[in-house]
Length: 187
Image (cartoon, rainbow, N blue to C red; front, side, top):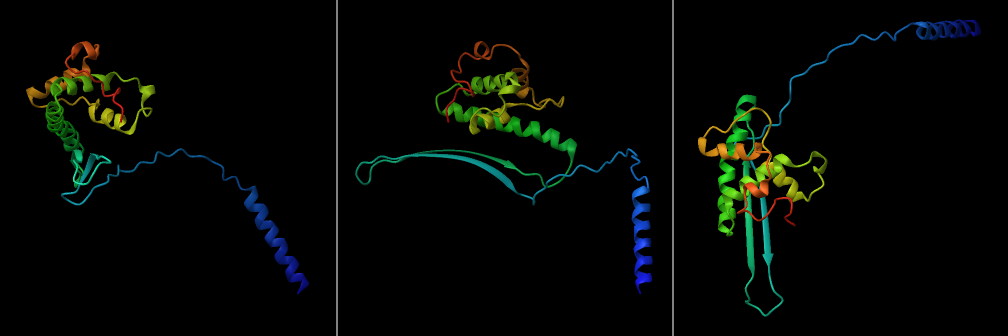
């Protein structure tokens, strides 16, 4: 018995020595690739951003309580198609910008000028300032920044959005009827 144990121990040591002596450090570069993955949702899904502000008073019962609500909704993708996705990105903005204009117009501002000014400012924002604003300021920046994919707005009425985003000039002088900057608003 002691001889068999000794023999097994010797074989075990030789195996370990053989494993350690083998050069398995050869590096062969391989390019790994995989298809892009996308997150898709059930048909008809959407995401909504709703901002509600309610102002009440500490007065008697049955007094006035005022509430303001603003909401945006986006359809979520239910199929994967890159070319269509790029086109829809611009199309959704060409639908959204006039709605934002109407919302601003209803508050007494020059809606068209303010949307164009926001597009102009978003394009000229210093990249080092990204992420340093409030949540609402960063959301507005994301909404008013057009992708640099070479795409264009299809309708001629929407070309002004593209021109405002690419102007590179002083946004305050281009759109003097809009008194506010999206980066100066306090939320």
